[in-house]
Figure 1 (cartoon, one colour):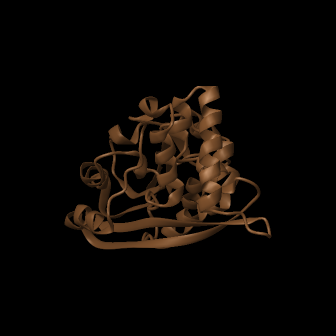
Figure 2: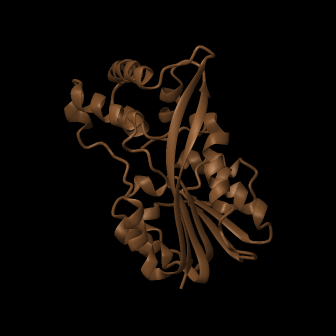
Figure 3: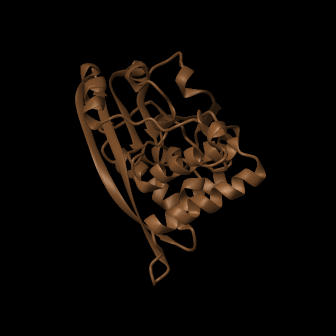
Length: 254
């Protein structure tokens, strides 16, 4: 799946805020080694460096474009290209942090305990994932994909995987000394025309667009924008209100 750092960072403040709020709940005073899994263009990694300037900080992402952007971000961290699903570091970390990444990976019941196993005893495993897969922004995306002439081509496109809050408790609790899980719904106030379409173009829409040719992509966008603009109408003041739920978890490892 291709990623465009500039499109992603068009909403940099809104995308970085959950990372900052997650980090604020991480109970680690002076960690030695910290890693940001799914670091993207480095905006969340920079928060880790700012909080723990003396720690060895790393960022890991599977997108070459994102890693290149992260290396140019100025964040004082080592950035590595790797598939998180197969990531197997030789040394444990004091903090494993992830902002809006695990939703792209399957089988969280196996994945998350395995990743927690790379945290040192007493260390922290913290992550945040979007929790809006049943919001109109995503249900309409799937509807357009299933109902258009491209249905067969998009039938097996990479989806978003997020479990229920209680399921994450069941996954993490057996490995945790303390566990804090919560959800937050943000109300993003977006500017301009087709604002929600522009938002999802940097994230959830990418697999669909990548699977289509140029002509199909344009037709898909026209249909999807029309439906989005009904679900999220632009107000008289030019603003579009976009509710967005996220799920957070912070576990101290046994």
